[in-house]
Amino acid sequence: MGSATETFYDVIRRQGITRRSFVKFCNLTAASLGLGPVAATQIAQALETKPRIPVIWMHGLECTCCSESFIRSAHPLVKDVVLSMVSLDYDDTLMAAAGHQADAILQETREKYKGGYILAVEGNPPLNEDGMYCIDGGRPFVEKLKEMADGAMAVIAWGACASWGCVQAAKPNPTQAVPIDKVIRDKPIIKVPGCPPIAEVMTGVISYILTFGKMPELDRQGRPKMFYSQRIHDKCYRRPHFDAGQFAESWDDEGARKGYCLYKMGCKGPTTYNACSTVRWNGGVSFPIQSGHGCIGCSEEGFWDKGSFYDRLTTIRQFGIEATADKIGLTAAGVVVAGVAVHTAATAVKRLTSKHDHHRRNDHQ
Amino acid sequence: MAHDAKMLTGVMDATDDVIVSGPSIYVYEAPVRLWHWGNALCITILAVTGYFIGSPPPTMSGEASDSFLFGYIRFSHFAAGQVLAVAFLARILWAFWGNKYSRQIFYLPVWEKTWWKGVVREARWYLFLEKEPYKYIGHNPLAHTAMFAMFTLFNLGMIITGFALYSEGAGRDSWQAKAFGWVFDIWPNSQDVHTLHHLGMWVIVIFAIVHIYAAVREDIMSRQTMISTMISGERQFRDEREG
Image 1 (cartoon, rainbow over the protein chains, first blue to last red):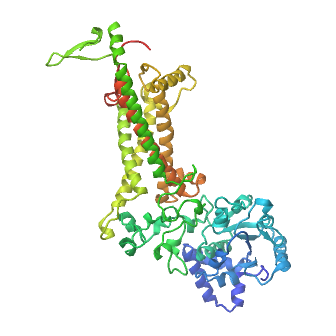
Image 2 (cartoon, each protein chain N blue to C red):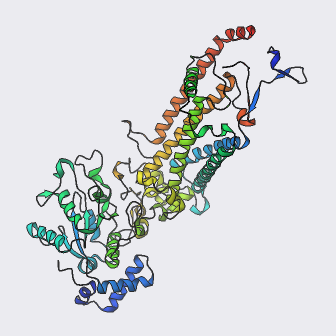
Image 3 (tube, chains in turn cyan, blue):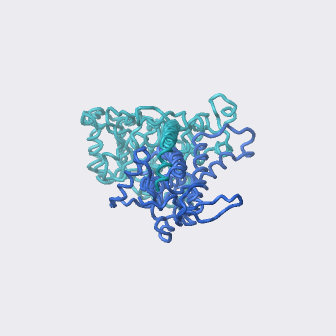
């Protein structure tokens, strides 16, 4: 997919885009990243002078939902990102080349741009049976991943799979699938979790790295702060119903019809960090809560193993039983109350039967 | 009333009954008592509101702008939590100024043989294997262990997880997030922290049941006052025998 030496500006001018449109694009990108007007000039300058950064997009154990999401990006349009901004040198799902031809591109990029390309990983490596559960080009994916990560400038972990493990790493995890930061330890990793992540978040992260040539600011879990610093709950349009104490109690009640808060229906918005309630999906059309279903917390660690999507209180499975904190607590409290009652009775019996001795002892003193 | 003449103090009421008082000592100074009862109030508010945060009351009707029920429940929880945390800090400070009994709950004298013997003896008393317990000015060794576990360790755990959860609403740049955000390094999904914090409430409820039972029982059965001591600070002993 082309040499990576020409600049973004060269490419779009070659495609017949005017300078006026280019400046507009810079301004829009600066605005969508939440940066000031000065940044637009910086973006323009960067795009005019910096060579395009090669991107290698690898697929491990995954469902390709990240790619499906990515190609639906509306701001910026994915064609702008793929054809103009990114030099997407390798993506086995999107590229025309296949087999040995495709593999050759990996090797070429690794040697030619050592320490200068971005490795984007969709999916994760399974480690069981020496990685044999995911074979890519005749070799375990985990080997290929380590090899490509070795020469990368930075690594992007696309989606819940690469960031946290997702469904293939859910209990009992027969393939021992692990998030990529368990096998790539010496490179900066940007986690862009979600199942899938929002398209605009994906292209936003890529645009940022390409235009500024550096990583976006990350939170303590390695996620870009600009998209993951607030919970779904913090910006949810149903939040006033939550504060008022107005909840849907079943899927077909008055509250559900009136669009009350889905907290009681197990909405994971209060514990989920993502941009769904602001950026939304499909070009800003809607997001799960807006269409009447609670958030399932798909961008959070181990979201498959945190009990039902439809319960407020998490099911705890530690003792071979399925119960919520309330059931466990209430049972334990009940046992303790019974214990106290028995102890009280025993104390009373003891007291009554020894009353006689007690008096005699006092008399002797 | 047929009591030992040595213990009479000669105080009489209108019907000529003699009011008896044994030897007494001032144990719990005012700040300790204030902390105890303040803590009890905070914990009650925290447990009730905390339960409702996990399982909200039936839905409210009408306009969202007309009510703020869940907001008030959460506010009460956060306010009581902050008071509890500040009171805990103040209590730690008081341990430096107060008498030696004010320091008791912050450490266990595990290097003292007599203390270990006391734990065993007190446990045997609860198992009906001893005729009577020893007398103690401060906490008895078994109670001491329970207080240390609950108020130095467990209370701190609830404060830490509580502030970590609060930081989710306060924002990533808040001081709560800076001070307590490391909790999410241990449990990256804050849903787990919610669950642990919730289980913690039940541990405290169970503690409260045992604590109240033990205080009432000891007040009746032991050789010293318990409940009134936490009100007046004075510990009275009902006999002058040693051991």
